[in-house]
Amino acid sequence: MQPVTTTHLLYLHGFRSSPQSFKARMLQTWLQQHAPAVVWCCPQLPPSPRAAWQAMRDAVRGWPVTSMAVLGSSLGGFYATALAEHLGCRAVVLNPAVDPARDLARHVGEQTAYHDPTQHFEFAAAHLDELRALAPASITRPERYAAVIAQGDELLDWREMSARYRGAHILLLEGSDHALSDFEQQLPFVLDFLALPRARCSGRSATAMGQSPS
Image (cartoon, rainbow, N blue to C red; front, side):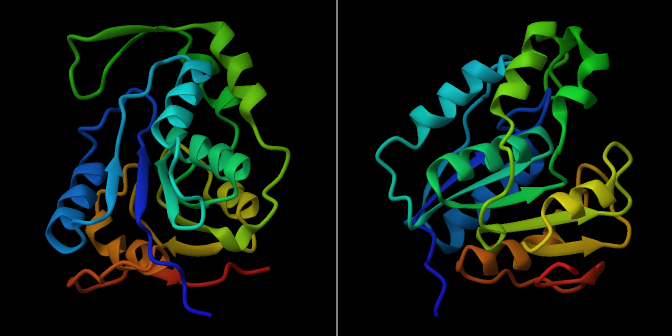
């Protein structure tokens, strides 16, 4: 069966990040050049997970579930998973946070925006409970997911990510880092999953591609 071409794509950035994420801008530029008909949305997510959830749902209201996809990085990967489980759509996750309430507990307090250090926001203890409330109990249809996971991730455990998305389409990178600084090399994998035009780039820093090991 031929994969459904993506017509609508939502990008969800990570903690302290923004629509200025280099991965978001790279993907948006590619779409503008090669698939301009794709509807693109990359909102600035508020610190509150409850408010972020509402912003996500508002952003995709009226979108066709069968041909839309959501793509998220780090905390955005957690959000993308929650939204994909809620809607039944496809999702691509990039070094996704598996248990953000646990991992972000040490960041409670005043934070600065990564792309604009002059912007400050409060990440409250209550936000941890909001994250727990959003966490899906399980991934019901892993074949709807593609995951790019870096063994060189300095913040998240690649083994935990791989276990969470077992059965999904996984690109496991030997090195790289949490930010996926070499994201251009992973674009073909992402575009293939979304059934979009392939990127003209060479090189793969991966040990596996396709179905994850059981």
